[in-house]
Length: 108
View (cartoon, rainbow, N blue to C red):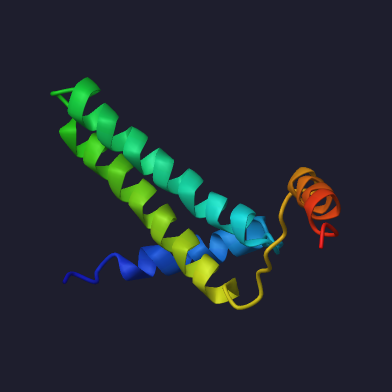
């Protein structure tokens, strides 16, 4: 495995922490940050595959590399905080669950 890109990942991680010092405390939003970056990587790969400028393939490769570095950085950030995130269902879900418990829970 080539590890020449790891300094770029850690630089990206540190830049992201400076720019966005707060990290989501709930697991869904924390995972969504990683997924959002992953989506940008998929978009770059799709653009490379279907919209590539044949005169400039190196720039397309660099864009995919930059996006992959951001995915890796956010995945590492997620891992840094994974033991601190909590499960916080939406209020709508909580309301639905409470209504169901009240309706069906006291039937015995």
